[in-house]
Amino acid sequence: MAPDQGNGSLARRGADAIRHAFDAYRRKFRQITHRARSRFEGQEWRGMQEDARERLDLYPRVITRVVADVRRILGEDAQDRTLWARMKAAYTQSIARRTDFELAETFFNSVTRRIFATVGVDPKIEYVDSDFDAPPPPVDEPVYRTYAGRGPIPALVRDILAEYSFTPAYVDIDRDARLVAGEIEARRRGEWGAQPIEAVEILRPVFYRNKGAYLIGRIRSGNRLMPLAVALLNAGQGIVVDAALTTEDDVSIVFSFTHSYFHMDADRPHDVIQFLKSIMPLKRVAELYIALGYNKHGKTELYRDLLRHLEGSTDKFKIAPGDRGMVMVVFTLPSYDVVFKVIRDEIPFPKTTTRPDVLKKYQLVFNHDRAGRLADAQEFEHLAFDRDRFSDKLLAELMDTAGDSVAIRDGQVVIRHLYTQRRMTPLNLYLRDATEVTARDAALEYGQAIKDLAATNIFPGDLLLKNFGVTRHGRVAFYDYDELCLLADCNFRDMPRARDLDEELAAEPWFYVGAEDLFPEEFLTFMGLYGTVREVFLEAHRDLLSPDFWRRMQARHTAGEVLDIFPYRQGRRLGTKS
Image 1 (cartoon, one colour):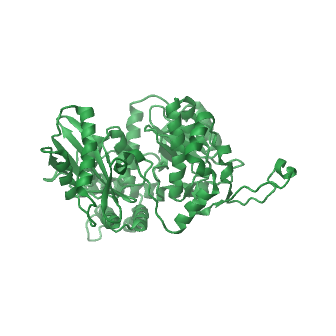
Image 2 (image 1 turned 60 degrees about the vertical axis):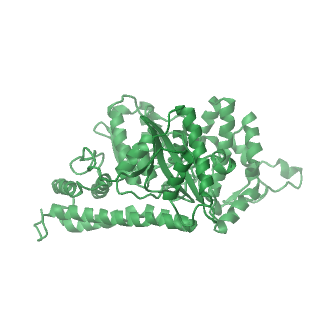
Image 3 (image 1 turned 135 degrees about the vertical axis):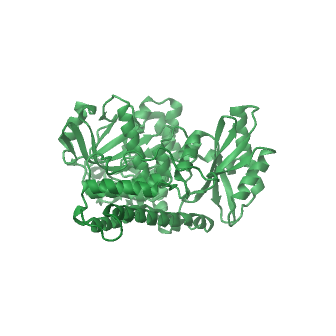
């Protein structure tokens, strides 16, 4: 080991370098996040998008710098695991009283995995589980404000809105309070009957995303809790309440894995997560951290959750239901609602994409507004699982077609690179088994998903039903990204009309078709919609089959317009009820 250089042990110096880098990361993260309020108040929607991209880029940039610093400090001992075990102990001591200790642990892991490229995990040099049994003791002030449920509900709601004030002010705070109170009362009567509201608790931070701001809370009566999400918009002339969501499903959709991350600042992320978990008990802790922009720690939590699940289950990984993909081997553990995707070594004709192309598409989705219609993906490297947990059929598929990414060593399946996504039911399989009512709704959702993606300058590329999935809430999202592209890169053309019978009957196109040319009039042919579902789709979304729709969208993006997309249905908007 290199000798001390006057500033404490080498282990302490290495640990301090990582902690100082984490401090710098957190300061910059919060600085960017704090801009969200002024962006919302000033309707600086492009600026909000730029902030979102800057914040996503922040973590890898800081990690790259600190890895270089640690290598310089440790010198020839940079891969001495005994030294790193001491560094971990010193680091743990230095973060013991932090209120964001869990994020600090994940940051340390990111450094060690960059240094060592460890296959599997090594608890001596990284935090497989947290080193802390519980978070630091709570401070005097909780992460939420409490409003007693005495008096009329509209007055209570007005007090809440007044405390969360903005510039410009609310257009009509009394109207908004009355409408929100009506939603709360309707839900209370339906769920609780005569049982009164004892208190409303609202998280102190405001949750910002895209063009919206959200007050997130819960309504309490005895042991009963009711979620509350108040959606705010800046209408130009002032702030208006656009929706008041009071069901677990509605609030869960706002926090869906298909949306981009919130800009919300909290001193105690763990406490905020516990609050959110109380109103969305079915939502994974990992997904909640990711939704708040702590995506690296969310990935840590997902991995820990998977390990715990594997310890308590016996089923095997197997090929995921649905049509076989040409680009990815997709597999799942039946008892776990996540899919795992490994890029094939060779992508067969007629696909022209390559492995680097696929990686770029996933990075595009990571950096882009997902609009509630693109499934978030977590990227993992150097994972190892017991060989006995894989079905023979899946293992044969992986070894035959993804051998560059998968190997078997010492009774383990080692995967060099994969993506995970929340499991959804492929839309083609969903429609096969759906009732008439749910099939009609899925057809409407399918069309709206395509429109919402277009509103964010995204074209799916491949509109086949099998590339879309249905969430547990009945929402339709896109999850196959190998042909996805920016809308601005497409050339939407009218279908040329045949001049004679020979041209009309020609087996091949008799006109020139460029690589970026698309003919919306042909989209329906490739969608795979039949019968009533097809009729429902056409009644609501026939405009998708016209080049004019796509050209108008392109023009709006070219003009710099940021279009409205809501994480709730039109019928939930209070403007439709006033």
